Image (tube, rainbow, N blue to C red; front, side, top):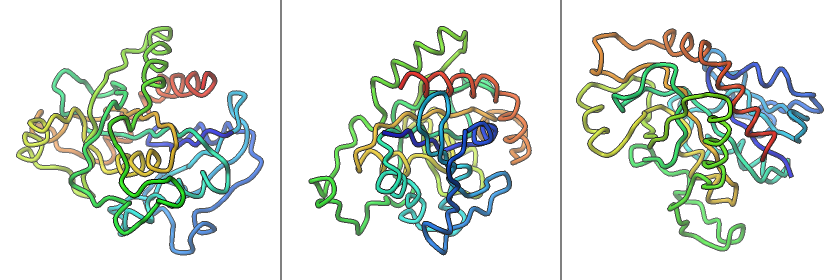
Length: 253
C-alpha cells in the first residue's frame, strides 16, 4: 500500500525529490478544483520516495478559497480509492497559541478542534464504504505514529512539541480575542487547513499523522502584525528539520 502526503508551506521540495511515475492535476479529479494560493501547485505526484510508494499532494485545496469542505477532501478520497493509500501524513504552517512555543518549532498534532468549520461528512453517508454513518473521533491521529515521530525526533535532536490544532475558516488571521478564546478551549496552534482533512481521512479508514510548523505566534501574543510572507519565510527556515523528520517517518512507516 502507498503513503499519502499533504505538503504544507516549506516542504514543497519533497515533491521534487520523488521518483515520479505519474502526475495528476486536481482538475483531473474534479474539473472545478484548482489551487489558488501562491506556492501551492495543485497536483498529486505519484512515485517512489525513501523506498516507499507515495502519493504527494503538492499544494492543497483550502476552504477559504471558496470550496466547500467536501471539495477540500476530494483529493484524499481519490488517493485512497484510486491510488491505494492506507496512510496519510498531513503537514501545515500554523500560528502558535501555546506561549511556550517559538516560531520555527515543529508540533506533532495529537488532537484537533473542527467546531469552527463545516464537517466534510455533512450530507455524506459512508455506511456502504466504512460500515458506519457516525464515526468515532477519539483517536484521529494514530498513536503508533505519534510514538514513532517522537522517537525519530529524539534521534535527530529535533525539539518536537505536542499539541491540539484548531482550524478556522480563514483567509483572515484571527483577532487577539479569538486567540484568547481558542487558548481557553485547549488549542495550542491554529491554522486554516488540516483538521477537516484529518477528520475525513480517519473516517474512511486511513491512519493519520499530522505535523505543524509554528511559523508565527498568533495574534495578540506579540505586537507584530501577521503576514503570509512571514509564514513562508519561517517555514522555509524550518524546512530542513521538517523534511528530515518527514523523510524518517516515511522510511519507517
